[in-house]
Length: 270
Image (cartoon, rainbow, N blue to C red; front, side, top):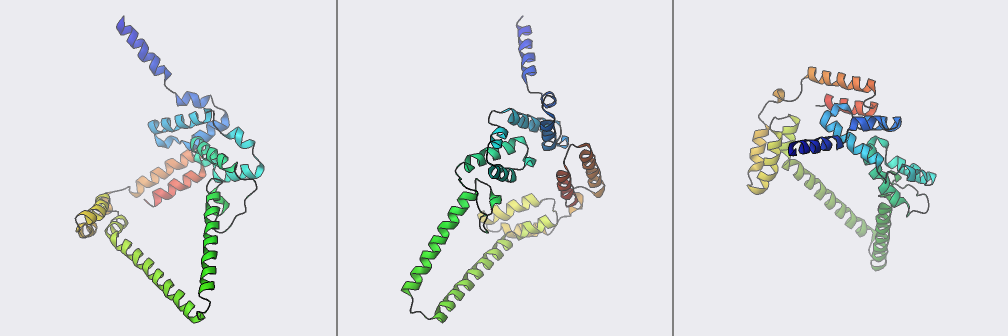
């Protein structure tokens, strides 16, 4: 009797688990297509199932913002749609839209795009950018006014000479810093360009070996110069096969044209 009871509980637990294929068929056609574009079957059964479950749950959630988005003013909804494209998928799109709806309620008028703060930043980030920019302008104005009033007897030649020397110093510091970073990661850069079979290990020795032992950079450099990349990665035939599979998925509607081009570019540069 106890065995039958445990078997009944196990069967009930299995039936209670989410069935993304069944739930997907019960969705409206546009939502079904949206999830299929966000979760291509190319992911494999397990990853596809997890992806579909997350996005189906997002569509059924009480805070799914589609109706709320339609109640906004046109410029507000257009701005949020531009910031949160549906290519993100239902779950990420929902999170993005909810964050920006919350931020846009604090804006009374339609913003004007500037060079420093373009509206493509979105309602959440754009106000912070404009506030920082305005504060910077106020500080710069105060500094310039103070320098002019206190140093009004300074000759123009001296001012230009001082600014030029500061500019040269800053430029030199930036150039030296960039060169130092490049030299520090030179073994890793060489390993990545050669597609070295141990490029991850070389990166770890390059960073931690140099910082801890001091000689890690030299070891990583020597190691990066040896090793053949021909035995790793995908050959041209395998890449062609993968591209054909992606093309078939695109023609069947499982993935979008943009996603096809993105993955095709990745394979060609593999």
